[in-house]
Image (cartoon, rainbow, N blue to C red; front, side, top):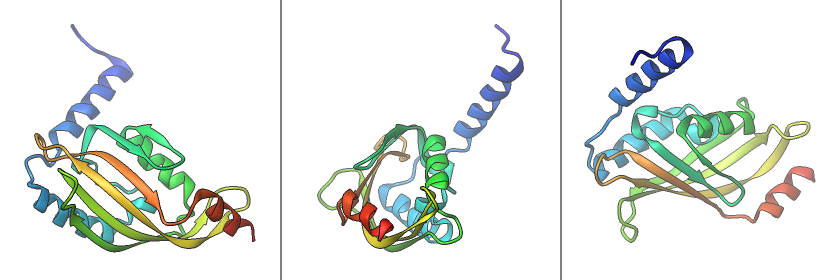
Length: 159
C-alpha cells in the first residue's frame, strides 16, 4: 500500500527520526551525554532537545502539566520561557542510586515566563528524574519537582 502527500512526508520524518536514535547507551553513558548536552543546550528552558536521546513514547509530568511526545514538550518549553532571560543552571546530573533506570538532574531555574506581560519569576530549584528504558537506553519519562509551591512561584512573578 502506497502512502502519498503529507502522510508520506510525515512517515519519512518519523522513520528518519527513529533511525537516528542513540540507542544502546548504558545509563552511565546516557548520564554523561545528558550532562554535556544540558549545559550546552539548556533545553529545560529553551526546548532545544537532542531528540536522538528520547523514546518516541516519551511522556513528561510536573505539578501542573502532563503531556506526551518530545516535540510537544519542546514546543511547550520554548513557548513558556522567555528565550532572552531564562536560564537552566545545572547543579548536578547523576545516576539515581535509589530509583532503577533513572537519572536525576538538579537545576536552578531563573528568568521570565511568557505569561501576561512577560513576568519575571524568582529563581528556584527543580529536581528532574529522567527514566531510561532498560531495553533501548532512551529517555522515556521525565518528572519535574519544584523547590517552591506553584502559588509561591506565581506570587513572586506578580510582586
